[in-house]
Amino acid sequence: MISRVVERQHSPTLMPPPPQAGEKIRVGFVSSFFVNHSNWKMPIKGWLSQLDRNRFELFGYDLALERDAETDAAAAMCDRFVQLPLDIAGWRREILADAPHVLIYPGILMDTMSTQLAAQRLAPVQCNSWGHPDTSGLPTLDYYLSSDLMEPAVAAASYSEKLVRLPNLSVYYEPVAVNPVIMSRAALGIRDDAFAFWSGQSLFKYLPEHDDVFARIAVQAPRSQFVFIRHRGSAHVTEVFQARLDSAFAAHGLAWRDYCIFLDKLGQSEFVAAQGLCDVFLDSVGWSGCNSTLESLANDLPIVTMPGGLMRGRHSAAILQMMGVTDTIAPTVDDYVALAARLANAPDERAAASRRIADNKHKVYRDRACVTALEEFLERAVRGE
Image 1 (cartoon, rainbow, N blue to C red):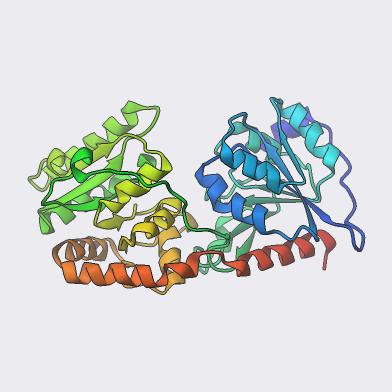
Image 2: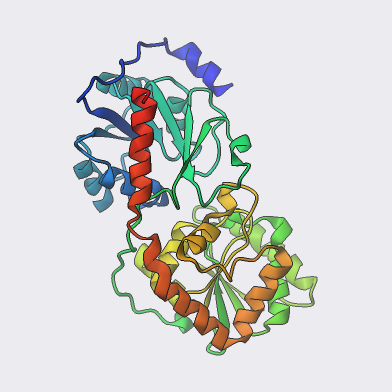
């Protein structure tokens, strides 16, 4: 429907021919998140920084006006970087003037501007990707660039685009850079004798059907505390989630306030420091952590996760698989609860899990295999090779 509406507003345009032999492939990234944001960290930054400049000419189309140090870094990585206060018609003109062979939209559905642009044919090859891990449903998007490790065997049926399974995590990722931050458990509200689970995902990732996992863990590990992050911009969202926790804990004869802590939104360095004061990373079930999971590696936290049926529920499991640390991947909710409680109650097992993270986390960093595969895909898709 969106595509039909957009088509009525804009006339079709001629597409550039395939590049001639020796001509660089022009690749544009269209996003509102060329800033210190999860979409920039995964996947834009790694692809922009690593694609071969002898083969590709890179364009950045920044749909937002926000700017920070990462925006400057993005601009330096591009042959041309555009950040202007344009409407849809203005962005259409700007992009078409560059005649890109490929456009990559890493975060469709996270803002209306990128969705309206992606609903048009502005390049011969147009790709969705997993800055927002869902298919678009748009007939104007040809491919979905995803992670082989994160996709189940039958994943292609879940996409309107043609699924491209890039190796491993599909992204070139560097260890998180943070400034030293002095922070105490007391300042966060974590008791001295508590076992702290880091549960710092966006609250919309927590589905009501899994609210009782926290209470069930608390029953088996009574010293538990669960650390959440308040939803920025809407106190009501946090209040709704807290009301759900109240019901889930009450069903087990417990009071949620005795076990759950809610922090205000943190900067990246504070976020990583707060994680480091906790004992275990407790992944959200159904919509898994990714950036937050990778950032937890700085503190070697054991990661408890349960893979879901769709890509968005399998990020943490893929990270653990790439490290070869799979013993904290739970196949069922019951296993998830039991595993989390066991780590809380068995310090030696927890320490061993932490050592395995420390010894193997290097395997997820600076992966060139996915970049080589992306370059080969772009060549085939554009040149028909």
